[in-house]
Amino acid sequence: AVHETQDPKVLTNSDEHDVQRVKIFEEYANGGLEILEAELSGAVDYTEQILLLLKSLNDADTQNEFDLSRFI
Image (cartoon, rainbow, N blue to C red):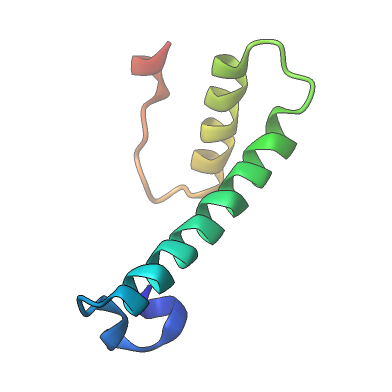
């Protein structure tokens, strides 16, 4: 929320800021769901498709070690 608004006051405990933080969270969550929907389009086995998606993201980021074998 701070990054999105560039205002650290968004973290204060008030109804206005609570609503603002929830809205920001929902927007990010919806964006992620749209990405997943596009990636999983036509998939029969979502588990396998998600693993492939994670693997492709990992391959793009060669600095991080991420072992998908524990999910199989």
